[in-house]
Amino acid sequence: MEDSGINRTGAPPQETAAPEHAAAQSSANGANPFAQNPSQAAKQVQPARGRPVPPRRNAPQHARPRNAKKPMHGLFGKKTAPKNADAARQSGRMRTNMPRTDAANGQNAPNGANAARPDTPRRPVHTQPPSEERGVPRSRTGAQAGRKKRRRAPGGGLFFGCVAAAILTISAGITALIEAPERRAQAESLAALSQAQQEQQQAESAAAGEIPYGPLMPGEDAAYTQPTAALVALPADGRVDMKYFDDALFIGDSLTRGFQEYKSGIENAKYAAYIGVGPKQFMEGLVENIKGEQVAAMDEIRAAQAKKVYILLGTNSMATLSDEAFLKYYTDFLRCLKEELAPGTIFYLQGIPPVTAEKFESDDNFSQERIKNLNESIAKIAYENDFHYLDLYGALADENGNLRQDIASGSIHLNDRGYNVWREYLITHTVYSPDNPYLPGSPRYIRPEE
Image (cartoon, rainbow, N blue to C red; front, side, top):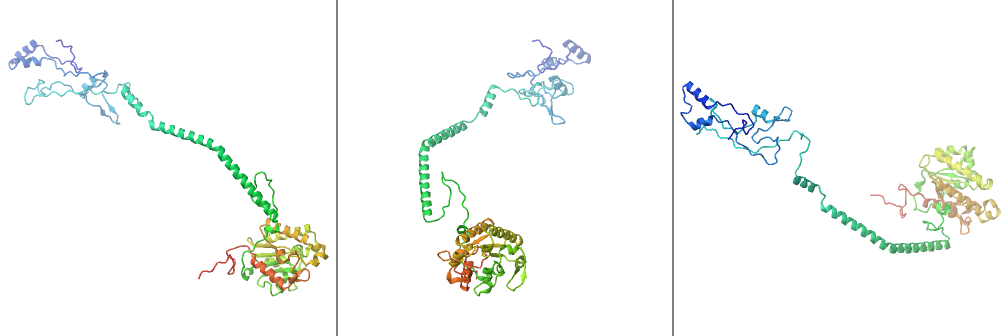
């Protein structure tokens, strides 16, 4: 068999001497090269050959042999590998399957205990070709690509879940369409029944003289109901002790001044009450107090520092002023009080009380209709200014709307019994507050803790 001059490992053959030249050289040195073992000597002249390694199936031509050393890490963590097999052999990083030789004379070691054993051939390790730099994925085989695609394929559970959700949605829509006429009929029936009941209640209220109220029904016109004295009037809310009036101020004319003169009055309250005055006199000029002193009404009102203010004006103004003029002065006076007194002050506006039947008949300025109309205006003013309206007219009138004869002193004023009725009305008609001194038996009474 002819030698091609290159061993299977790819290294160039080592230069060996011809047999004749080797024999001549050995004779010259005085030794016979064939004396020991002719076969061994024949082996020495054969070129060193590596053990053939079968190529891997479908292996690339640039694959690195299995017995080549693995690339080492470089300075910055990158792998450095020889560019070709020749450089690997020169750098000593590729092992060959050549038999070991004696290090001393370069000859093959003898068979025996010290004989060198050839390395077991290993399968070649494939390295990335130069065209596949780091970051460029390798080409996958068909099986690998199929497995990857199968992993990325959506699961069947999601598909069936979507189908189930679609079926439920469609069934719910069909059910709603089937039941819609029946539900519409029930709603119309309930609406008709409710409207009939509402109309019946309104008819009963109208027959009883009550003002209907509540939400508007379909087909009704929206209308604003003006506040009336009956709606705005403060209702009864239990009895309070007389000390409730310790910080109260009563503003008015001669009717209010009677509380200072009669024993049935309210002695612990403060007063700014003057004879023959109206709202105009409280803002202009001087007035005479119970002591006969000429004072400015607003000065005494400020000095009282009251937390509750009771106002009764209008009887004297009915004889001298028109309704429009009286209401203008009345509104201006209330605005002045609200600015002068401390925030949080409670205001009670009392309606104009009735007069006797003789006064109604003899003086057109004091007709029942006019007094009621003025009281309606006062109640509206109280409603608009967040004040409290007290229906004093209803508390002192009889069944005919006239001042009760048993409590009258003349045609306008009250006697001691009349002030007792008036006081009782004020005691039972107060705006609720947890600090009010309610008496036992009142619905608002709270027993003190022992």
